Length: 274
Image (tube, rainbow, N blue to C red):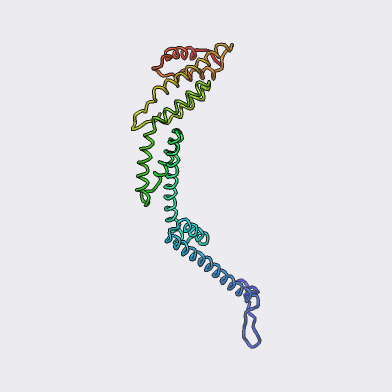
């Protein structure tokens, strides 16, 4: 058994009474102080969290869910394991998220309607999509769900009513670029045309005028690249040849220039390149 340390040693008087040494008294006193300080801090922070939760619940009852959420968040910062704070914050966050989705949906819908009134159908198309997304994000468990469903029906109806206007505006804008000689820009713009996807598994065909314009652009740029290759001298770079082929491929099968484009493609595919 090791010899007792100085702090553990008892001091015995001649009359036989033994007392603790001063060092041991100091250690015991320090331990008591630390225990008291810890208890004070624990009750202080827990007391603060409890008060914040009460304030949050009061604000919640008054309908101020955002103020209540802030108080619940502060309570969790005081006591991150407080179950009441965690539960209340989660419930409030759910309410706020759904309320935000409703507000954002309504705002996007109002802007879309304004864009339609001003004739900006392409911007309206984007805004109606935003509105739809926000209303769709409202949870089926939310008190706003029924209202959000009605708004979705309204958005879909208004969107369908302007689909032709959207297409016409895309065509008009692209044609303006084409007439200004901005062929690549016009083609890339038409690539953004929104109704090229699939609906119920069936292709949604492009309007005839847009198909025709894309074919005209393809032929114009394909022929331009072809002539550059033929007049450039020497062996053309493979990238130039592929670029010419790419544009000729864009010509629709029903276009009048399609047979000629196929001949150019055949020639380019067999052309030496580097």
